[in-house]
Image (cartoon, rainbow, N blue to C red; front, side):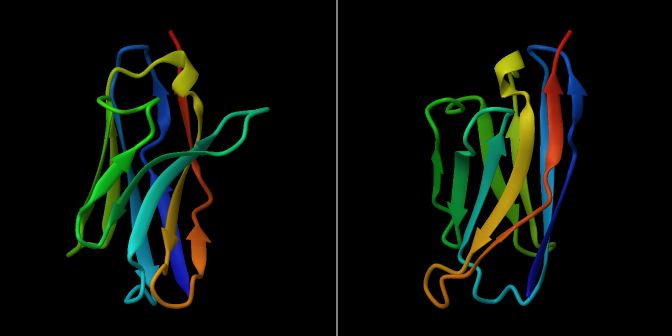
Amino acid sequence: QVQLVESGGGLVQPGGSLTLSCRVSGSISNINYMAWQRQSPGKERELLAHITNSGRTKYADSVKGRFTISRDNVENLVFLQMNSLMPEDTAVYYCYAAELLTSGRDYWGKGTQVTVSS
């Protein structure tokens, strides 16, 4: 089993920055795909960014140039650095992990709230 715990959410003013962290623990040897997603009330969950074991990253158009996903393989952490935040970035942000090359299982964290407001 794999556990994902997000942290770092909070209230930030428009134009501000925030860094989210996701601690990954458990049976993580087959995890080869990590991502951040978000969901706002009344909207579908949106994939924001992903990073593979090889370090390849990809971003949604809505966050490209503003958000950066990274990982610390020693500490088993995945980060989402968010800059130039806008009110429309307000959402619950979820960490996601998947074993794409083996079982196909995927895992979710419980989410952390990010509110962008003046």
